[in-house]
Image 1 (cartoon, rainbow, N blue to C red):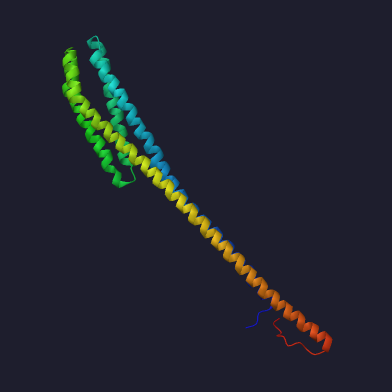
Image 2 (tube, rainbow, N blue to C red):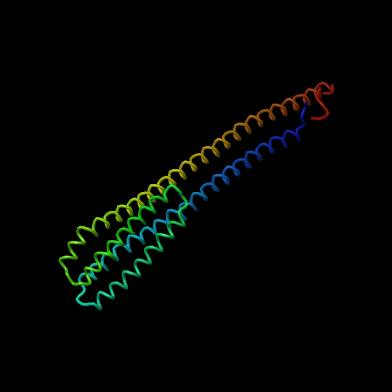
Length: 235
């Protein structure tokens, strides 16, 4: 089938327009995927890391409050320390629950539960052994109990916390690497479409140039010989 010049131009323009649409669609799809990853990074890693930092801060304050209780000179100061401990306990337990509910990676729930179990064991030793001994004012007995009973529980809590921090850091690193892969693939895809469009456009332009050249040559022959050109009415 012979195409007229108008049809050829429309065909070439339509092909280039299709390439532009393909480039735009590829960019939008990859941008959407990047946005999803960034939302995950914000919701899980950024906010989650901040909550883990809150746990670490509360643990330090709890240690200080325990020592304030042990070194308190009188019952009134020990009562103040116990109020502080109770408030910090509530804050830490609320943060654990927030992290537990907000965790979007089910495989990381075990690290949270491990921390919760370690914290419960620490709190039980503190409330049943350390604080009652501290209330009696027997400092040497309290120090010994802290070293033999409380410190090992505290080490377990800190290890569980470090595990949570490492998982958050590793996850953020994986998301960053995934984003870089998505970006690289998007760039390669868009570049490939642009190259295909350029090459195809050059081929179509060359084809059209040859068609137009033959048409002009046919008219030149007509003008020289007075014979009708052997061309289709469609051209």
